[in-house]
Length: 169
Length: 441
Image 1 (tube, helix red, strand yellow):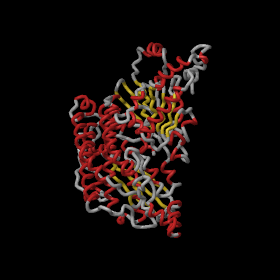
Image 2 (cartoon, each protein chain N blue to C red):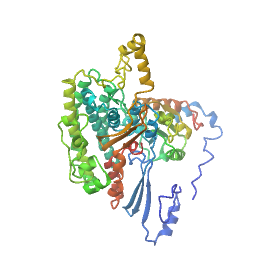
Image 3 (cartoon, each protein chain N blue to C red):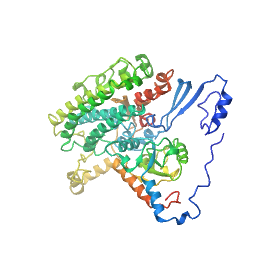
């Protein structure tokens, strides 16, 4: 049996939605930015720092970022933390496609930004943005937990400025 | 969704999505075939990274278990062949990312063996290495026990483990400048001396940590739920461990007090007093107990190392006294927090042309290592971590291969899982404590 086809027509808020009033946009975006359920794509060292950020000292749950999504289908935000290898890349793409719109991606760490220290390796994807669109890049190898917090806040600002019709800001 | 990979499956494959369940159950009712092939991973919260498990189930019993690895293969060993010997530390530190100092030490010991400078490494550098390794062991075991709890469905152990780990990482950051992947140990010694106040920081940690370990013990040691999930689970006896090359806490939980720090001492471990904790049970609970006891022993070693660093070894060199190998700058934290020592900069920029040329050659090209090969091994938190270093006489490694304990220990997974319950696979894998960065490299 073939894969279920992805819907080609996205549900809209109606034909007049581009001219949706500002208050409605504000409420939608306000809801979206403070309830980001994370699908943590933990791959390598950075995943450990991601987990450290979710723990008691840094605690990103206070930003409304909840790392307990049951799976990609219930997540709004995918945080790719770690080295994406060519062997892993199809799975990353596949799971990203399973996420419902609106969806956001944070690329956490040098490896998923650009390949990082493995920039000349024969088996590492040189940046996860080659396979999926990325909203926020967090630099570092691995980045400090504070950097991830800053990345999350940057994403929230981005969502706040987003038009409700745009799938991606 | 269709099964993406066919090679893992034998017999009839039933693919279901959505409403097909009803249809399938109608077709299958009456048949006695209860076999089920489960694909776990590669991305799964309970697999310690990107490990993929293929499980054949008969009801809830695992009849066959296989691992698929390589999802985190970054080609570190190959990449190192295109970097200088010193740059190699930057790569090896990223292999087993929960125990970076151990990777660096094993690699640097191998390079030092080839250079023939093993006996000339300053004692202060050795003591710093020992202290850093034991600190890393604590942080690594904290993550091991914490994630173990989380994978069994208990979040509290991980909150404890992460808190304690942050304490260790604070000290690490104070000393090396980085929380993880420090590249602190270099061929010939360590990159920088302990900054002022580091001894006090470690001293504070030594005061707090025993109580924290005690807290964790109080929570887990006799916890009935924890015991039910760990006792007599994933049993592997000594014969099995020996046949599969298993080392580390797994081997010691089967009763053999094999610890390279005792049996083949390095970095001066023979001068420290500590015990090698063992258990006789060979199950998950035994491995947990061994890890807990090892952390307590590590604290003893850190205390002794700290006494030496603040006493007899105070103010000594931390890099080998050989200008052809040791980084000329004697890297020191400047007022800006990073970089070469200002004295050295003044010397090469305005004092001596030869010194500038020497600095330039050593930094860009690196030092040459005599042709040959060497094997050095350390006792990492997961077992014997060995580095096989081969040189053709150049400034870059000809080949560096690592014997990573996660990789070797992981092959005990089928032996411990087959015949058990599917839920016990989680605790079996977690008790091996594989780090995929080390497995795949």
